[in-house]
Length: 218
Image (tube, rainbow, N blue to C red):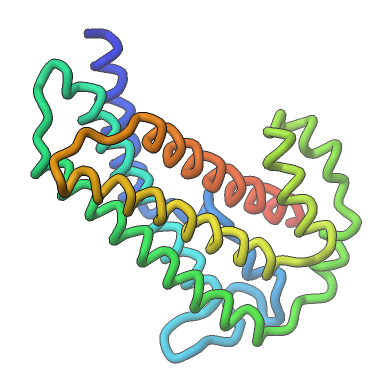
């Protein structure tokens, strides 16, 4: 019972967190500072600036992740409550829709970012940043942090966005596999659920670590 209550509580917190207007602070935020014009005066396409796309993309990604946490909680409790495949279909469809929206947002973000010159002073700071000390001080996951460092130490902020889009595409493949089984009223393979949960977590930390570094430049 205690385990089930913890799962439900975590799910509720994630759902509330994803709906709060704070998502830009946790997923590749401040990437706009690396471009000419910064976050407020940067170029825009017909609808948004780089900052606007970052915020929207983060929101969609976190909503999809929150959908999957709800999905996992339903699977965890299914042994006690039974498996409602109609409910699982609705949840996985929402997770897919939000991740598709995140991917499309990042496609637009990458397009506008590639047309925008970098801010030389920010790129220089990224190249001179003490990554090792930062990682050790903040006790960040070394493997994930190293990936972020590889991009930012070379001033490749576009690469951060491209990596996040690639991660979203890979997560979507897993989500569609899970959906296929649920649509046929087949209980999801636990290995696939573990994989997609890990992929979401790694992608989240990758985006967060990029944010932490960019914030540290202020």
